Amino acid sequence: MKNQTLWQGIASDLEKEIVAGSLARGSRLPTESMLSQRYGVNRHTIRKALSHLAEKSLIWSKRGSGVFVMQKPTIYSMGERVRFSQNLLDAGRTPSRQKLSLSQRLATHEEASSLKIKKNSKVHHYEGISFADDEPIALFHSVFCSKRFPALAEYIEDLQSVTQALKKCGVNDYIRASTYVSAVAASSLQANHLRIKPNDPLLCTTSLNTDQSGTPIEFGRTYFSGKHVTLSYEA
Amino acid sequence: MKNQTLWQGIASDLEKEIVAGSLARGSRLPTESMLSQRYGVNRHTIRKALSHLAEKSLIWSKRGSGVFVMQKPTIYSMGERVRFSQNLLDAGRTPSRQKLSLSQRLATHEEASSLKIKKNSKVHHYEGISFADDEPIALFHSVFCSKRFPALAEYIEDLQSVTQALKKCGVNDYIRASTYVSAVAASSLQANHLRIKPNDPLLCTTSLNTDQSGTPIEFGRTYFSGKHVTLSYEA
DNA sequence: TTTAATTTGTGCGTATGTATT
DNA sequence: AAATACATACGCACAAATTAA
Image (cartoon, rainbow over all chains, first blue to last red; front, side, top):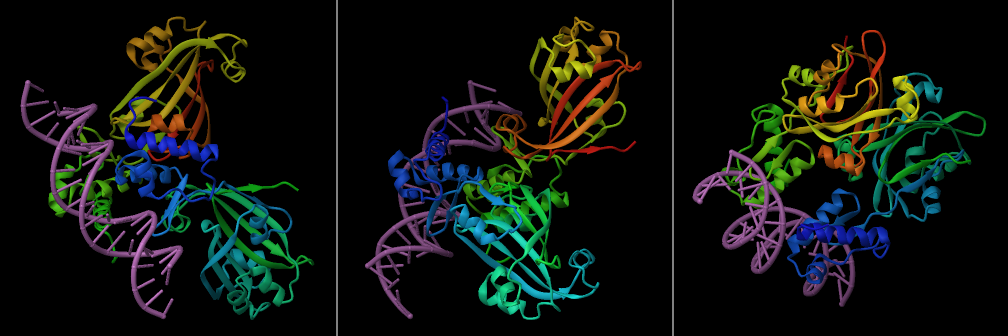
């Protein structure tokens, strides 16, 4: 480990602290000024080291706020009932969602056949970003039959929860009927939203939820950041 | 595209020149000093922009030499006769190889069964890096039956070519019998050799070459950098 | 609600080290 | 051996976002 530059030494030093746990996951690092004093180097040198750790997705920074240690990959359970918020709470994370769009449009062929509705039926299209502790971990978009759930959009808008909105529509429970998983590379747009790099691996799940009678309710795709999420298929 | 910082504007400017072709693939960029004069900014600002383009694998820099535009992905043909050098020459690239190791050891079960030799037979193990225009594009390792080719190692050492070394051993032609392709994430060691980031996608090919009579000659794996190589299966 | 302090981000200037030409 | 070109590092100043008073 000789012949290291200053920033390389500092970066590997901080990395050791992170993997050892003395810098806890999710915690805030000392400020750049603090670190530059501690190591006796210029702030730019600290920033170069931090930049390297950020590239490796070990930390992420927020202007005006601080630099934070990335959380461990989230284990996302894919059982019969898939509930975003509960999954994250179970993993000890704080869930939140950001709406990107919520509108009505005509169903695609794939959507119509999956939902078992007529082609060119109107559907609610809900699209957004899922966060865990302010870290984006997934992009989702799903469609619901407008005819069956006329007021769903308003409920989602108010409640910020698909599960709660569906309850308002009389659907007290829904079941994951099928899930397909594939691996794709992130587009630049997706990468931007998920704060990762383009072409980073994404887990793409295509899923269909039905009510208890087996009638399709929701069809959608979710792109999980491969760095942050591990899908789990345990019973 | 408003509200851009200086380095962002310069980076997107240079990126446009690269994709448009006015900065040719493989060519050298103006020096950082030149660019800082051209754009009327400090050299550090140029370096920040270049650093961003390097992260996107659009350019790469060599200390003391210059900054170069990355080559296009290499179309690597996987026809009946797979020849590393000829493939690259066909693609207009300059091929070279760097030996990492060349030694003898016992064949693994997989290698022995593929080469149709007895288990625990000795094999030549040849491992290295393939370059195109000084850019590493693949890691390879392959094994040959030591009993059949006793002097192969010396020939490879001298000739730096598997095809030529095999000719010295009396194999004037060999044929790709089978190729399996999968996608894996780069280990840190692989990433280091290929100048990419850990977990970047690699194309892993497992292949078996035989002579004209169908007798196995060479069994090996090659890990292509997904950024630089596209495998082609055209006839 | 407004203000002030804090913290990260951008940018310039300078100097020196190191590898290549 | 000398010039060139990228890499590292220090110091200063200000902008932009956040947070706390």
